[in-house]
Length: 461
Image 1 (cartoon, rainbow, N blue to C red):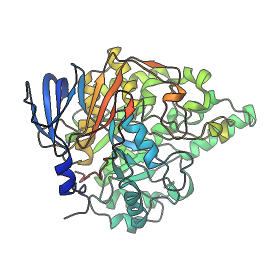
Image 2: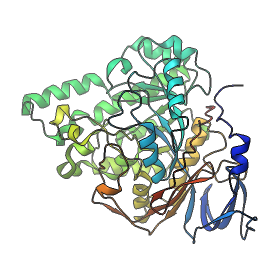
Image 3: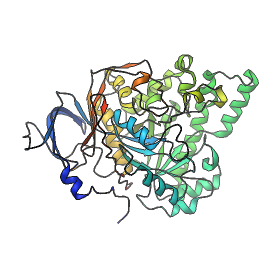
Image 4: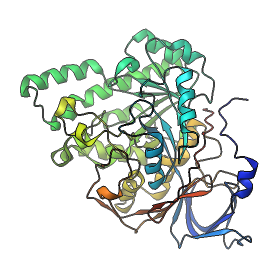
């Protein structure tokens, strides 16, 4: 048996966990909305139905008609541990995640040292055990010369193989054509790619320097990290996958033109899949004037037309997954001039709330939000017994008050970096409660102290 299975709770721990009944919830799951109750026992959903009897000694959480969703499974985060923990770490960022309704996450390999061998990924699993409030899995990083390590991976050793085909540091940029061919031919797991064409970006940077000197305005970022650079690299990745019959998942797509590379339809029938991130669905290039480098990210936030095309692609199932690409940096780093301000922004605490803004504006349905943040992620990565509200599944759940209101203030921010691109914004919804493995981790604006995260079982498909 693979070691990918989530560790079972010790028998005495299960016995000590009180049963919990969630009463009077509006359950959004598997394409429909129903009224009902949930009985949770031993960390799992034992029964779903109307008017459930509360067992003796059980706790009761009165949902009061609020929305009960399967927890958000975020397939792309950067929690900065090991080596970059001044920005964030597994404990702090998973804390912010559960406050935002994210119950599981998949974390990236560009840490220090990078996660490019089996010892490094084992170290990350050990670091998360007992410290992560949310469930966790980790990507294995591809380099130009670690194909033998990749070939030795077994299903469950990692959630996938991350390949930076542009915009990375150190040896994580895979720009050797032969190395890419070997990776796509031999990878035993899903390949998740960051697609931007580095030579095109370098040429655009040089042109910007010639025009502005070193004082390049942040508004030039989407021209430097251009739509053409994104499309060229994404098209190359898709071609590699098709020629080698590989499982490819293209991360954080940003342009209307890239949508032509992907087919609409359910995730279960695809070998090539697509992801979009919440900030690319929320911001557009007009926001650089106010937010500056706070929304500098790679790939860049682009035009309103691109954003609208991404939303349309979510609706027609051309895009399969919505994630965050949570990537905290210190505020003083973000205040640097364009070329030295790092790319990335913290998002996990407010990602689901930002999607509810699209619900309120009738751009995305509740069922679509649930599918793209939970169901499809579980299907894509083969996450066992999570991602749905089903009897027998782990009780990873989020209770949302769609009219509860959440104001983003510096005091409310839980990220280690201490800031958010949403500061000053008032979301219309609020996260009323988050449950991880049947235990309430966040309720009514407060952490409960529970640290219940388990290793995800990611079998792939």
